[in-house]
Length: 194
Image (cartoon, rainbow, N blue to C red; front, side, top):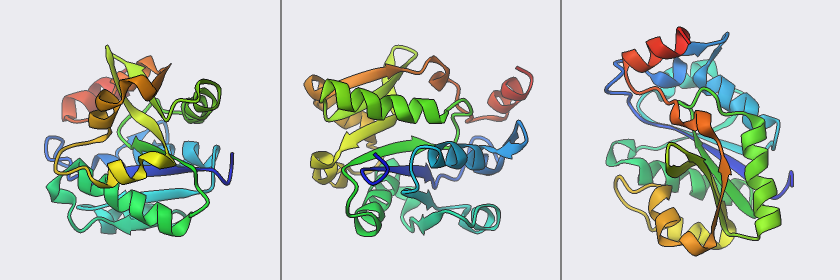
């Protein structure tokens, strides 16, 4: 699995509703981004971190992961997804599956990433998404045949578009805590008081 799975951490947004880079918020002694990266590292060393608006601040905190700056981060999620995938294909050409994750899900763990891989192997489906709050979303795994379709996404389109479009080739893993994400100061306050 090590040489087949790459994890792409999407951390390019400007956290406009929060007012500060959510990537660098602290929870349980780590930044949210460091937590996500450390959990990813338990599954694979093939990790690409996509930065954007707060790239200088992020670089100062996390220097031990391969980073790429998405110059077009303001165009939406698709541009970060594509920038991360292009870099991954170049840097890790042996990767056969790609897990996309974000850094504002504080309860993501290596076991969630591993469950995506295990479900891919048992179900033989090309997409494996996390299931929470009556939806399918990130973290999500795509087999390499989906690379071209991912590279054709635009604007605010994210992985969810392909999950919906290819339901017959999609499996899911339960991740009920995936509904927790940090978008506003209130979200963060709830998290640290939970």
